[in-house]
Image (cartoon, rainbow, N blue to C red; front, side, top):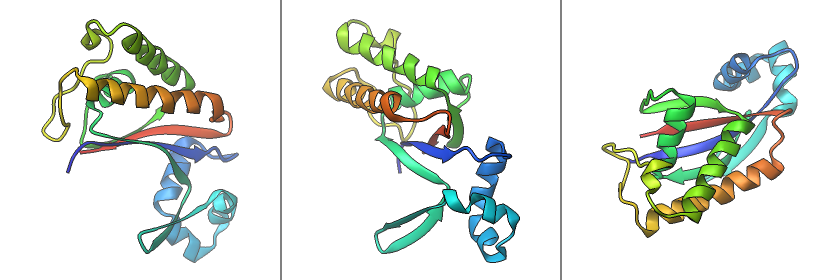
Length: 167
């Protein structure tokens, strides 16, 4: 067990809002069996995955992953969940959110004084280490690279970006 954190991409589908698309994704297998109109509408956006002798289909695709980067999780909780943390949640992330996180990563990496003022750690039973040491800065550097790549390459007009955690 531990804090696992993801960013997922979900295609925007004409005539459907985020909630509808996310709901369809949760019922994809059932809809595939029925081959109804909704399934036909989302079919071009279905991704096929295989890993560890398992295969599955989804409308969502993982674009980033962190493990026990509690300072990054804390940032998402405070900035997209208004401080409300739950063991498992999914929230939409905007381009502005990513730009804000990227700028904070730069600030912390440039001036290593008082990192807790910009990206504080978040205590939790499964959240890992809370110190401000080399591991903390390595996670900030990793996050900066992930976010920089997404800002350069992610298409917010055609896809939703979602943060998801579990702990």
